[in-house]
Amino acid sequence: MSIEVTEKPFIKLRSLEAVVARRSLTDCLIMHVDFRGVEVDWDKKELERSLFLGCYFDNFDYEIRLRNRGAHIFPRLSGLPFDPYQADLYTPDRLLLERNASTGESRDDVITKRFYETGGRSPNVVEGLAQRLHDSCIDEALRDYINGVDIGMPRKLVGFMGGHSVPRATPAYDDCARLARTLAQRDFIITTGGGPGIMEAANFGAYMAAFDDAAFQDAISMLDPKQQTKNYTAFDQSVEVIDKFKNGMDNLSIPTYYYADEHNNPFATKIAKYFANSLREDGLTSLCNHGVIFCQGGPGTIEEVFMSCVQNYYQLGVTSPMILFGKEFYGNVDLIKSTHVFEVLQFFGKQSAEFAKLLLITDSVEETLNFILQASL
Image (cartoon, rainbow, N blue to C red):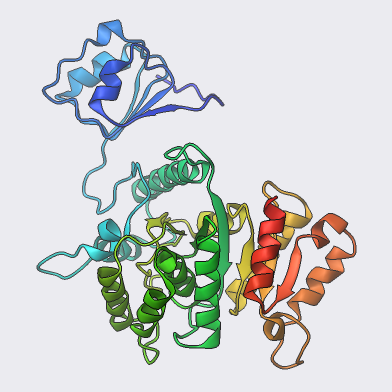
């Protein structure tokens, strides 16, 4: 039986009670519901185009009964360390902090190992299908988060891009943390690639927006500047900060399993982790609806600048401010130290006044904040 593909959005149901309460399950997406040992009067329900993902049933006859009424059932896939039907965004506790008592590995460690053992970017068909299902469900969960389904209003995302190797207790790290904290205190959701360096600084600053200035200074002093942020010692220090300052401000990371050498920082309270790096890279720039701040970085950061440039110049989907934070790095201050990226952007700004309005190069936290606030009006 074929599945009819329509543009109509699905109604998501994630509990047995929600399924039982509805007469019509047409165009409903039912995820992770356990129907074993439960009497449901399916004869009284409309099941056309209903979709069951990763649900439990007593037996195959039960499934056939639903299929004959128009339901579509995607089976559970066993033997995987990840859930192909991941219904929600990850949390640090669930993905990074909870560890196996015997091996010391987190769920993220196990999934990363599996990713590379099964071909990395070139898995077999079944593994690849499981990964794509997972990433599609992460897409859906991320969309719900951005649209604010849980709070009744859209969230305002501001992205931070920058180098993974920028060490702690440097001006670049500290300025990024303070800027992210200031924006988070204005109800912006700070969004990063979830790794170390500038990404950690932004997630850390956003997390600490829930606390006063003294707590922020205390927390930043706990992060050993002698440790590079990609190693486990630095990660353990991050966990100590979280243990001391619980329930930080909501913020987001969008990492990928492709970069196994970049350990995810635990300061992001919501994690949308993908297998496909292409989905992650596009999402980072295209989802930040209230601006992207580009801090000091390497070729990967420069690539993200021009991905955002293309999106804004051609008005592909969301257009939002581009702030190059660091005049020496992005400007033309010094032939050796500068990348001259802003000069290239200005060239295109001369061809499009609308694009030019979205550009700013600065070293000022206050100027960045005002630029984003003005664009949000």
